[in-house]
Length: 170
Image (cartoon, rainbow, N blue to C red; front, side, top):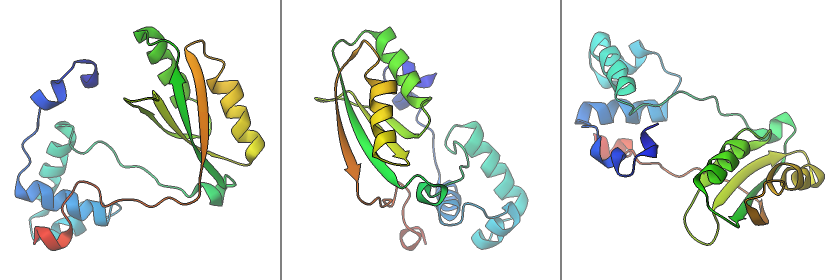
């Protein structure tokens, strides 16, 4: 994976031109739009739009398209962030824990971070007992884990991201 080599991401910085930014911005605002509609919105030929989208994917700029689902609507109304602190930091132990956390049912995101804590685990569960079970059955069972701290999420709001707003692009 590219992230296994320190500094490689910076070395492989991908040139993004103004049209690429317009395409990405329009996709961010309407991710389910068709290539034809996207091209029409941007005032470019559909063939150019399709080529640019393929290029953005091939260069690793456009990673994927994801379906976002409200966990509450599916019966998982309790969200939390679990802070995980490790007792030792062997590469194999960290990698094994990271993989196990990311594969745990109910886990939405896992962040490997710097600072006092080593991981942040964002989860959605049915109730407090299920939250406890994730901590006791999926996190603290790993030998490298020294401590956890669980924080309930009252509300989540998305930020604007890294793309310039439509007002700034035009």
